Length: 134
Image (tube, rainbow, N blue to C red; front, side):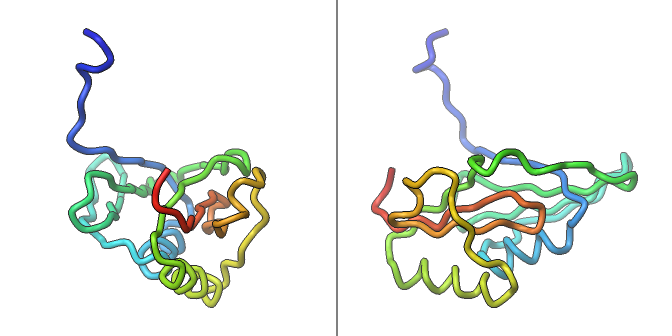
C-alpha cells in the first residue's frame, strides 16, 4: 500500500485532563467550539467531544475516576486555528482573556506575526492565527 492510498473520513485529537470542567469551559465557552457529544463508560472514563459544525476533526477530552496525569508537553506543541477575519480572531482572543487566559509569548516567533498564543488550563497551547491557510 502506498501512502497516497491512505484516507480518513475523520480526525480526532484525544487527551486526558485533571481539569476537566475548566478545559471544557476554555474550549466550549472561550474558544467557541460546539459540544458534539459527551460520554461515560464503565471503565471509569468520562469525556466530551468538541468540534466545529461540519468539520471532519474533533477534540476529545477525558477524565478517569482514578485521575489522568497529563503534564503539558513543550511550549512549541500547538493546536493552531486558522481564522480568516482579524475581527473574529480578536473577538475570541478577547473572550479568552476576559476568562483569565492571557496571551503568552510563543516559543517560535513565526506565530507572533499574525497569531495569538494562549495556554489552556492544563498548559497546552493554542494559536489563533490570522491567515488564509497554511
